[in-house]
Image (cartoon, rainbow, N blue to C red; front, side, top):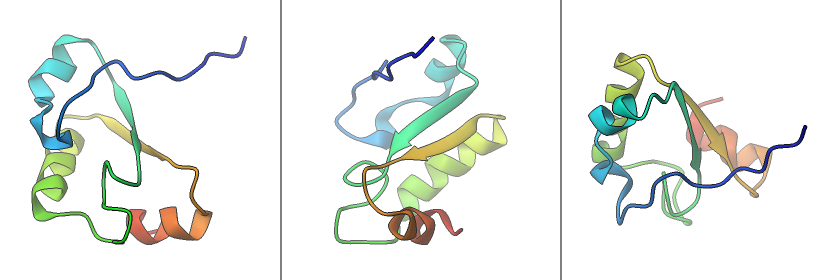
Amino acid sequence: MLKILYPKLYAPSLVEIEPELLEKLGLKGILLDLDNTIVSRDSNRYSEEVGEWLGELRARGFRLGIVSNNSRQRVGAVAGL
């Protein structure tokens, strides 16, 4: 059965989403949009603040994925692939 992806949370900034809340919701993994969520549209590097937030999620055992309608090369440049 095809399941449509839809956001479970909205926040003005990615880093405003507390990892504790994600744990309370019972989430094990998170799909994040690339452009204008993880990085600005004109950059291949995320901010230090976003890097720390992603590191905190990894340390807590969350699985992270990137979704994008951009090219594989663009996603790979940001994800370090």
